[in-house]
Image (cartoon, rainbow, N blue to C red; front, side, top):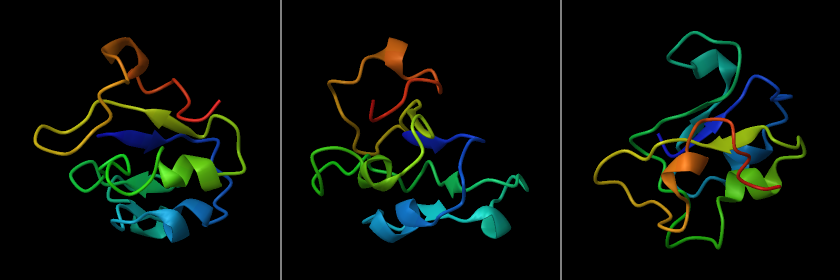
Amino acid sequence: MAVKITDICIACGSCIDECPVEAIVDDSDNPKGEDIYYVYPDKCVECVGHNDQPACASACPTDGCIVWDAPVDGQPSRSEISADMRNGSTPVVQ
């Protein structure tokens, strides 16, 4: 995974509209069956080559909803984000 959406998501849809690689689905399409939006880890590229930071987090009106998580091998990721920040709780935009 590269970025992850937490359970504080308000399901506004802003992130879905901004994702340049269509890696985000709403709660009805969450493959884990959870009632939150979901980022497909094998599709998320952390907006490398698209934006200065992940567009989903920039568009999100909920502080701390979108967090850094471990990237998938072979997928583009932001090299300046250290392993200690990729714990699934560090907000992408603070």
